[in-house]
Amino acid sequence: MTRKEFVNKIQVFADTFQSYVRPACAHFVSRAVTSVTETGVNMIQDVENPNYVPSVVAWGEKKGILTRASAKPKDGDLVIFDRTYDAVAPAGIGPEDDMTHIGIVLDAADTKYIHFSSSADAPVHMWWDTWPGVGKVFGFIDVFSLMKPEQEKVGRYSRIIDGTVYDVISRETTTVWKLLEDGKQTPFEYTEKQFFHY
Image 1 (cartoon, helix red, strand yellow):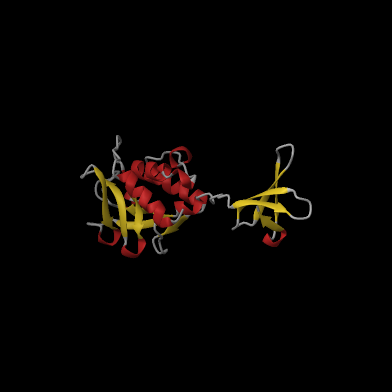
Image 2 (spheres, one colour):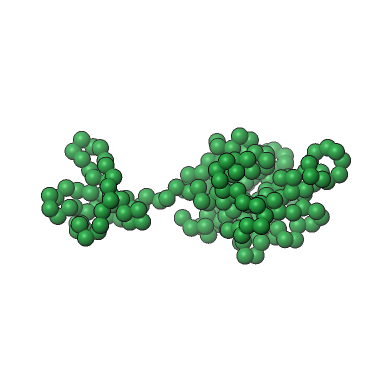
């Protein structure tokens, strides 16, 4: 799966999403990312409170995929905002209102992202460099980097010398699995010259 395909699936999910919690931004993000099952990322299960932006940020930091606002974002990253509204006391927007909003980057080059808007009661598109008021970008979380590599079978190969059958799981990792008579599988490295295609 590419980042573009990931972003497209997020947008398909957004078309039918309805939230039952408020604020709903982290609720939307966690469920949108989890809905793309090909990534193998389950934010609903892995984040302590997937409906709370600071919990999502803490999860991203623990995973080593959180970068600050000065970093160059990529399509599919989560984008976190500070001070988008007066979330906690004291009255007025201040440092206590950091990490108050989150969305998903759709087009990093254009600063376009999708987020759940409470006022619209739906996911909407915006551009983070034009956020109204005092809101500013806190950082980005690269959830796409957690995606498990696809294990696409590209064919069956047999070793010429002894005829033992091997399955090629991934050309990228050049790993094959030897199919033993007892049903167990053992990985080892190979060069394609050692095998021929059936």
